[in-house]
Length: 114
Length: 114
Image (cartoon, rainbow over all chains, first blue to last red; front, side, top):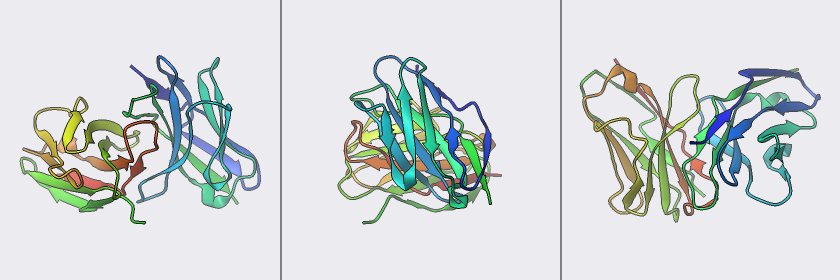
């Protein structure tokens, strides 16, 4: 069975500084990896995905993520944080082609301090 | 275009009662998913529909939970004899098909069982 770990419950970063939200996964085969963001009282919004190809994936709102197969990681990054980036971030995985059942991590609360 | 919609946004019921939660997916999306998100956790898969049929209901916690999608569009999640432990946010998502296409989530229905 697949699993996702987000080791940090909360990440605090100053506005303008780079941010990283960590994610590691465990799945057999070649995984498909996703990042979603959840704002208060709103649904999950898709940020980016890794399917195959270039290990660095660029997504919405200036976010990017790097797939590292040897470390089974898919960390979310942004070069310069905005206060409006403050939200709950979820990493998710499926075991690859033809699969559909997303397995989510517990989420990481990102707070960007002005 | 319109996103995934869910009604009601909030539902408060008493233990033992029956509830129905509705999901209206994005037009043209053949795949529909239900997830449950408990406080402080990531969403957990409940059931997946491809068209009208439930292709995978392995995430339903017990036989009090049932879901239908009779015309391949709107879906209803039904919970019988509700228990306090059923309290959670129920999320619906849809995707163009079941492959690697990202799932688009609705805002969720917050169910509270008193």
